[in-house]
Length: 177
Image (cartoon, rainbow, N blue to C red):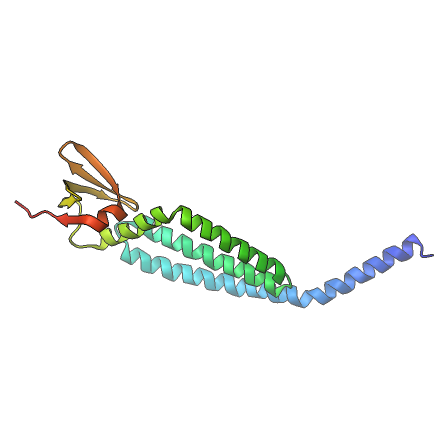
């Protein structure tokens, strides 16, 4: 019958050999994190610089796109790290679960995404600017402000606020008097 000291010695010996066996994978994972982190930062810098040039007047769009790309990049780095250190099943489960979560979220916010994409198109459209008179589905007004999701039009009886996806589909410019 083994003694308590012998059992403790056996456990510590087995633990030391397990650590020794896992050390190359952990070091590979840490090296990957350093290289991937530097690469992600470089990509973020280049993306932010490019987006700032495109969206000079609206830095919120540049920040939004940059943040979304950063989340995807870092998530990919995390899943790859888990795979490198021998936790591939956990990485697979996280990837699958996040895919289902993303599907649900994208369905829930599809209207907001449509408004945001339409907002980018409206901002880039040279024929649709603040101060222009436009007809949106039979309502004539002056464009006051174009935001990420909504556009504000000054109309005869006040202010009309509509989602950009709705406006982008059916606006026409009214000729100047």
